Image (tube, rainbow, N blue to C red):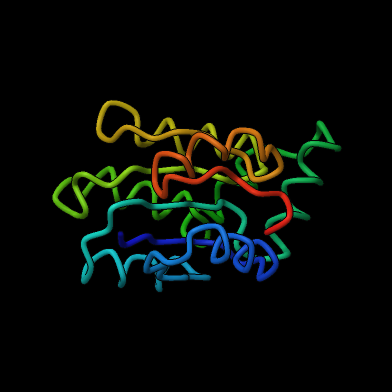
Length: 152
């Protein structure tokens, strides 16, 4: 099975690699890497994170904590986040057309936006990384195994 993983956190990447072994996992840390991979490989599953830079976490936190800050401030970084990859997939239906898409971002607001952009075009599932119980079904489906906390 070929799996694309978009994530900037190497601890999460390591956990995914251990969980998904022996499948081929193409790890991407940037939007550009992910789109390049999607253009050249037909994936069976795609895992997308939203916040791909430390600054994205801080911007989102600031917007949530400070009601005077516009949400538009978050959206202006869309081209640097997993949202850009979700949008690319929604606009390019022949790219990995049968891939199962999982949004594993812990940023619930942005994960919902990613799901919204894929809505009606490509089915996807929200499985926040901080909710391991949700991953059990995902790993059973993809690998025939359950999510093992000892591997994370």
